[in-house]
Image (cartoon, rainbow, N blue to C red; front, top):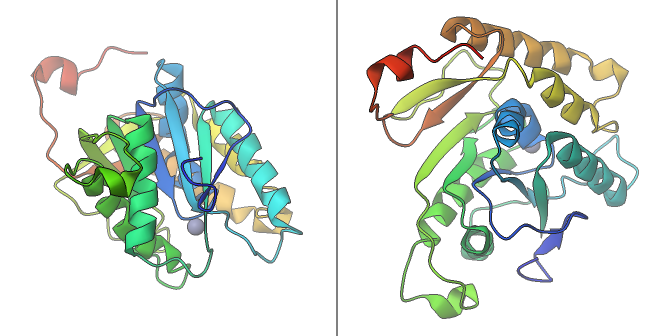
Length: 254
Ligand SMILES: [Zn+2]
């Protein structure tokens, strides 16, 4: 959307601004990592967006990029979010100046208060995830840099208030790092999350059903730890500040 060569807008009409943007390397990263959190934010009235750095193609199961893009659009519709799929290359995603700038342009355009990024790598899975983590972190910084307007097509600077991370490291027992960790209650949105992942029919055929059991099992574990039916574990770039200890620790029942 910000640049014909680097971004393809989703079919929905783009909103003026977004409260929260979550970024992934490929369509389906965000749904798997924090789809329940995004659906919950939408229920709470926030404007939410997903940015994919690549279209995720080619993959063994998909006949063409168009099919994958249609799946991604359907997943966004299920979650109730706006989606931008950028045109950097799957399997060849590397942190670099151009991709940082193009992502920062999207941040400057939609002015999110919170950016949710990928944390760390996924050993034995796509190395794009680790590169995406670096790109997102840099783009959050680039979004607020002044005296660089010509680099960003004149888009005004935008300081992002908070950055948090989701993890795709399913094959790890190491919890995400970062100054804070917290569990988002997704009891009411776990089914929406699962439905959004199911939208990627070419990626998750019946023989890959274990992915859904993994996602559900993890949601049950993280939820139980925090006293919810289902949860997503996120980490924050800063410790969580608390203004009211009672409401922060003892939220009213839904
Ligand atoms: Zn991925």
